[in-house]
Length: 178
Image 1 (cartoon, rainbow, N blue to C red):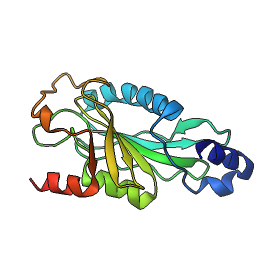
Image 2: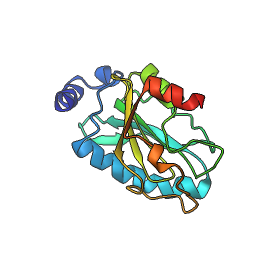
Image 3: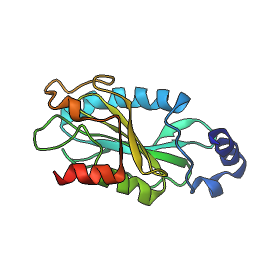
Image 4: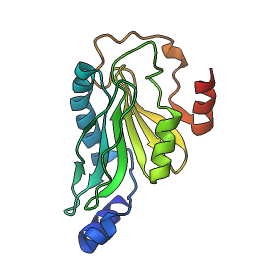
C-alpha cells in the first residue's frame, strides 16, 4: 500500500498530498525512523525538551520529515500540517528521565492526538525504547526495547518487568489511572 500511495502522490501532486498515508512500522520506514530518533535523542536530553514533527513522503516518493519542533519537558506541539507532503506519522521524544513522568510508556494523549489526525506515531523514551502507535488498531507496541536507541545518561531503570511489549488504548488508560 505504501508504494501505491507514493506513486499516487507523485502522480497527483499537491492535491493528494493534503491527505494522509499509512505508516507501516517496518522496512525502509523503520530504518529511517531509527536513524532519526537516534539523532534526536541526545539533542532532546541535552535540552531537556521533547522534540517532535511529522514523517512524510515528499513529491518524489522519498521519506522526509517536517521542521522539528522543540517543546517542553513533558509536551511538544507539532508543527503546522505540511500541505505538500503525504504525512504518514507523527514522531516525538519523551525528553529526559524524570521520576515525575511515566516516560517509558506512550501516553493516552499521544494515541488520541495521532488518531484525531488520522496518522500513526513513533515515540522514543529516555530508556532508549521506540514505540509505534497504530491508530487504526488503537494499539502501541515496542519496535525495540530498552537501550535500542541512545539512553538519557540519567536514566534509572525501574520496574522494567512491568513494561509490556504492547498496549491497547484501554490498557494505557488503566495504566495511567494508577
